[in-house]
Image (cartoon, rainbow, N blue to C red; front, top):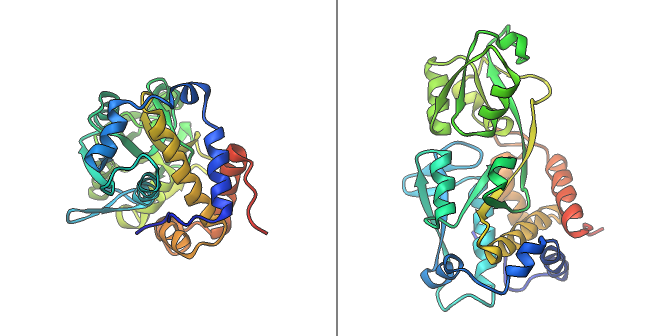
Length: 306
């Protein structure tokens, strides 16, 4: 699905200009020098995107095809690359690169074996060696747990909690809950399978991920506590040596978010499929709209059309 067209509206063009201006000084200083990794995207015609597991709402795999909210965002970035003056004769396409764990996938980006990963929660540790785009979602650390466990540290004392290794949830819960025992899984789908099979009865993770998979894996469980342990923006990450890819990714995400705010039917449908009212996440249009407006108004002094 093509979400960004060459004939952009005046509003999107203005958003593009504003978003370019919001990059940090390091990015601006290096933007004139394209790294070999960035050149490879144009020369090869491939945007190599890390995929970790197969779990809603970010990723859904059917056969050899991938979909999900992360791929809606990747398609917007791909479309932005394909309207860039730097594009060669061939159209750039998305090439999924499977990773066995979060650490392995992010190391692929650091080493240049992959270009980008989307659906990554912000942490200060990751920010030290990777660069984040604008967020397109927000997550919070919560748990799926049976009756009698309200998700507070006291209720988790002595309990076994499943978490995805190297995830933000694993770090936050380990720091917040002194007496729990943690069982680590390499990928989100491994953790969900363990919950469904009864190998763990409590699973900690991102709120959107837990809610999206609750009905399928643990319909009797509750999403607790009422307030998350921590909240974090969720965006894409690129290597800090690829400033042009960071800029063009921000432009693609910015256009996607502004399209949703301004009632673009294609954009609304693509996003709502994964997190909207009729999805397993069940967010209202107004909730999504409000978050997107905050992101763009903060980054680009964006004002939606009246």
